[in-house]
Length: 215
Image (cartoon, rainbow, N blue to C red; front, side, top):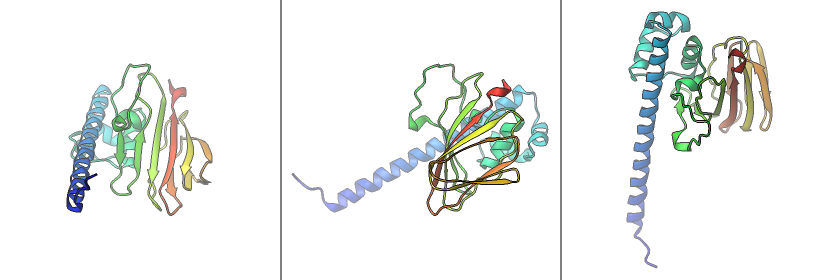
């Protein structure tokens, strides 16, 4: 068996890494475009001007305009405010709706949003189906990072959490709960809420947002 020279192996690895980096950047640009189109479409469906959406969400008109043009990536806190103002959940802004009843979503097609400031990563696992009220998300928080506060949902929306890895502090209103690896948590989400990684490694947790009682 002929062994490739070390220089060729290193070159091949460098090229592969660069190709993957370009692919990731292209996927991120595509996700930003989907997000921009969904926010603009839903705003117009509700006959809201940029000024009206800004007033409802507490997000500035200029920031909403930049997001709709794909010129800015909103933080998770900003996106949660926009979603609540538009009467939808987070995931519904990250993917167009589908009518399929049996749907496989490959990892490469799952919408992912990364908060540049904190490194907080949200991966949407559930499809966006018309008339459904369930969002299933895999969240990853870097060591010591926090999500920032998510705006309160409408009364009737609840959330479920399962910690896959690490140690998470959940702050709901004025109450704080520490959720250990393997623990689950349920809460009514009509109060502001935030999550902090208390560990020295990344914390991964499933989040399910249940808005079915609003239908």
